[in-house]
Image 1 (tube, rainbow, N blue to C red):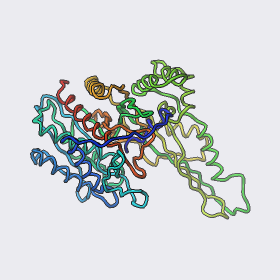
Image 2 (image 1 turned 120 degrees about the horizontal axis):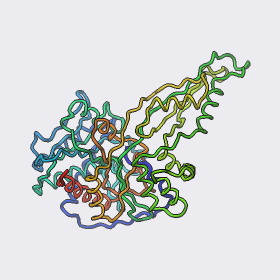
Image 3 (image 1 turned 30 degrees about the vertical axis):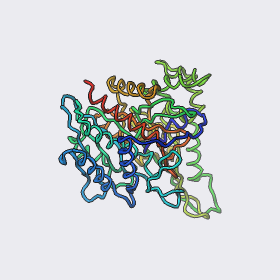
Image 4 (image 1 turned 135 degrees about the horizontal axis):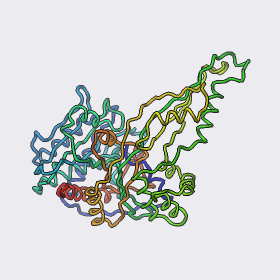
Length: 468
């Protein structure tokens, strides 16, 4: 669920659309474009598409480039029309493999909702259009193009490179590909760490390439239900006790509550580096929050200033759905609210549930779990990985590298829980004022795509040749 996340609110600057000019493509760029076009033109939605078709198409490209057929497998849950692609680029074996991850399923897209056909690749006015251009077939195409390019160059990495193009990240499939692979074929994807193309975008602010983020943590999703039951009765004889009023009062208390601020290594580093991109009081407060002992006044001011900053500082819980009553002329026998929480990594779900019970402060309001939490621990910022990212970023772009915590979620959580560190590192710059993932007329910049392909190619070479 790519990238509709904290960066869109980070800095409230406006930005003009960038002009991009046509140019003669190199052989590498043409290959990357062809693969991208092929993927976009394949419908991989959960309702009417198939990731198996896309996986087979990418498998053929790898085999045609010289990969042994035994090292390229289209594999998945029996009976499903949505299979994954797992391929291995053999190295010397002196280092543990590196997993290169991207999902190839996409969210639904209706032709009547778009100004163009969402499943026909289109280049227009300096942009590539199509469902999945941003989330995240750009990353999938770039990874395939990178491995083909390396194979043609005769490159021999120290680490095996494992490519996993997976299904089910967007929830429309009948299973999640990463989870299934870990449970059934962990040996195929076991790695020292993961480079995940579904997070960590480099960012354009105010028309300039400002910084490259590295997603090293993500918040944990859990949903609760608040529920009240009454005997009911005729609406003409209303007592003081009313399930809807009781629930409303409980939600009012919840809306006034803030979970305690807690920073981790990732968010502390984020605020410290973000402060260097800001000015005035915001910059001062960000620097104060990024210190070992955060300033409580700065935390309060940043929490009030933006939902983004607040979400980076603490667990959040918000009511998202309501239901109550059964007839307009009857007293409600029940009323319920769905409360979705995004917990900081390492926060126990039962601790949050206990806090909700305490804040609601009403034994008539039952608090139960609807969607259980799947923990997603922090990834340690390994010096060799961060050094490689910084080196390639400086070489190509001369912008700072900033670790971030995603407020949403990716398939990285399954791998982190399996003990495999995950780094979200996309190569394609995104305009924070033009994020169309999951939306109408999804697109990315043409030159941004080609530059992203070069960035990932160089990064993969650096990480797979460096000693660990």
